[in-house]
Structures are given as structure tokens and as C-alpha cells.
Length: 365
Ligand code: MN
Image 1 (cartoon, rainbow, N blue to C red):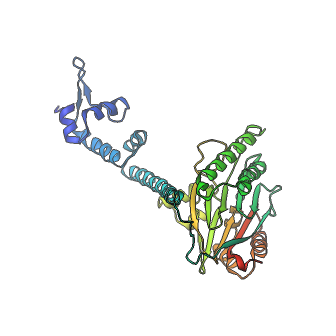
Image 2: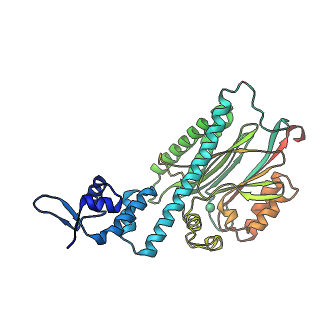
Image 3: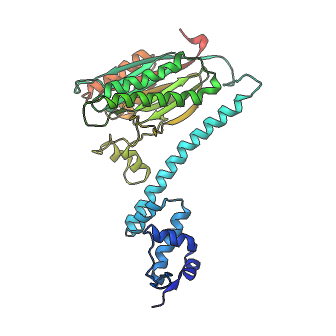
């Protein structure tokens, strides 16, 4: 009794009749009754609450398929789902914010008549660097790869049967950025092309892999332009910056546990000991939809960068990593010390480190 016409229900729920018809077709909000003669849809007043929830979720921008899931859940489960959705939106926005900053920087210097003055004192900067990769004490093979050259710093952590060639291929492909002479203003396109080619290289390796498990690699790389570092990152390898005595992570892990931390479902400490802590949400797996984070990092003389695989950060406590990186030792000695720390703690995983110092050129040895 008391069924509402689609017009009355639309008004009460703030959804249009057109939207209501669509939601019926999608099974999202079927009417209480359809008149067998006229075909008119009739809605029960009790359906208003669900209709208003659909309207709110639409305003939030949630896709219809996901709304259908939420409306089938009880209150607390629906709340968790909305929280998870929103955390994902914020991650996407953060990635797009980095991309927007990159583009703004790129476009504003493109037609600039003045040569770019990257840092206030305008004295030329250079980098001093070292890379080291080690199989550890448990794994039979090393599926990590690490590289440091005059323009490229990179670590990659391969997985699957052909994980070692996958990580090596990803870095090898990026090395062409080191020898190629692209204008600094073309950095974004060069990096994107580099990633696409690295992904195709991983694809070819995965295709010819005899095993059934997924083949891929993480990739965390920085390209030195002479005044800035462009950062490319996908997976759970990491980049850190030591600046003015502060040591902080400048990449975001693309892991299941990190997304659970972002959603407030577990603490950072729980994430560190979570049984699925190595489960990746994103990596280079040979599909063209790889979504690396791209960022342009302004540098200062005195900065020290650390790139490392999870064989370091999942094994060595943060404080010990910070101390090793904060010492007076140069890059060579520091990467050896970091890998030594991982080995002293059992070296359960392959471990790779790159350390690079930004210096005024006259201070370079
Ligand atoms: Mn690893």
C-alpha cells in the first residue's frame, strides 16, 4: 500500500526519473512493483533510505558497480567500504597532484626566454653515487637489480620465475635515458616513454616464462637533470631523502598493507608484521596500464638520497637505516654498511641499495 509513482519517488529521493530507470536496469534499486499494464515503476516509501544513500554515493563520485556492493552491506560494513573507497580517491588525487606539479613546472619553463635557474645560489650541482645489490643469506638467486650512473639511479625487485631478468630489463631500458640527449624540458615525455619501454621488456620476459606465476618487477628510479631529480616509482621499493638532518621516505608503497594503513584499518606497526605485507597493488608486470608515480624533486646541495628494495626496509629497523645513512661515510661505504646490516639480521631477502649525494660541483672529488 502507499506506493509512490516514479515522479514522486524521484522528488523525494533527489534522483531523476532517468537515473531511477538506469538504477533499475542495473539491479541497483529495483522498484517495489512494476504495473503489468502500463509498465510504470512504483516504489515503496521504505526504499527512500536506500535511494538517498545511492544519491549520496553518486555525489561522492563512487562508480555504480561499487555502489551496488555498498547498498548490499549492513551499516558497519558499508562504512568500511566507503572509507576504503575514499582512501583510494585520495591516493589517486595525490598521484595526480604530483603529475600536475610536474606538468606546471614542465610547461612554465618550456618557452621561458631566461635560462632556468634551479637553485638560489645557482652554483652548479653534481651527484656522487654508489649502488650495491646482494642475494642475502637465504635466497639462492638475486632477483633484485641496482644501478647508479651519472644520470640514473635505480633499484628494482623482480618476482616470479623470471624475476631476475625482469628487474634487470627494467633498469637496462631506463639506462638509455642516461645516454640520450633529450632537452630537460622534455623530461616528462622521456620518462613516460622509458617506463612504457621497460614495461614492454617485462612483458616479453613474462611471455617467454615457462612457469605459471606472475612475472614482474618493482621500479624506483631517479633521473638527474643537472639541477633536479625526476622520480619514477612503482611497487614497494623505496626512496628516502636525508636533508638538514631529517630522514624521510619520499615514495609511497604500492602494497595492500599500505592501503590498509591509509584506510585506517591497521597501524603502521601492524603493517610491518602483517603476513601479506609483501603483496603488491602495483608493479611493472608487462601490462600497458602500469601507473607509476612520477615526480620532480627539487634538490639542494647536501641532500642525500637512498633508494632501496624491501630486503632492506623490511629487515633493518628504520632507526638503524637512518643512522647508517646519516653518518659521514661516502656513498660506497654507506651502501656496504646498509647491506651488511641486512645480512647481520639474517638477510632473508635480496637486498639492494643506491646512495647518492648532491654536491656543489667544485666539491666533487
Ligand atoms: Mn624483495
